[in-house]
Length: 113
Image (cartoon, rainbow, N blue to C red; front, top):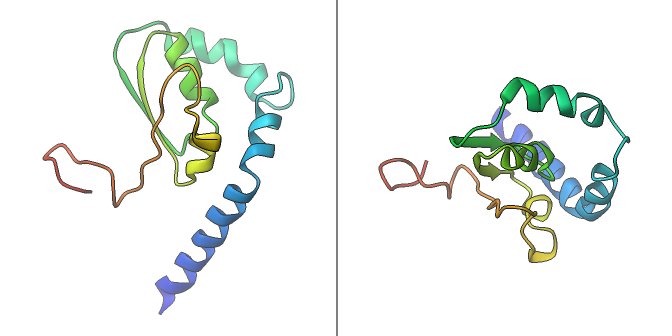
């Protein structure tokens, strides 16, 4: 039953982030609060503008995904905590980033992963 302990910890983490999602989103979207705001411009220069597809797994509140979207990419972003991706049922602007899990994510063959 080694795997059971790991799943219990993951469920605790998911519940924790769901409980504090709104507070985290407000904090994370405040400019200057963490390293993202220091490397944001360098990230944009490194990635450059584009028209391709981008996938962000574990997107949290979506700041990297929003940056990619602003550069012209079509972004699909996922996170195990739906409340981070769609706070109070509202998609994160400027794009809709659905909350998917490994069990519900469609595979290329049309089934679940």
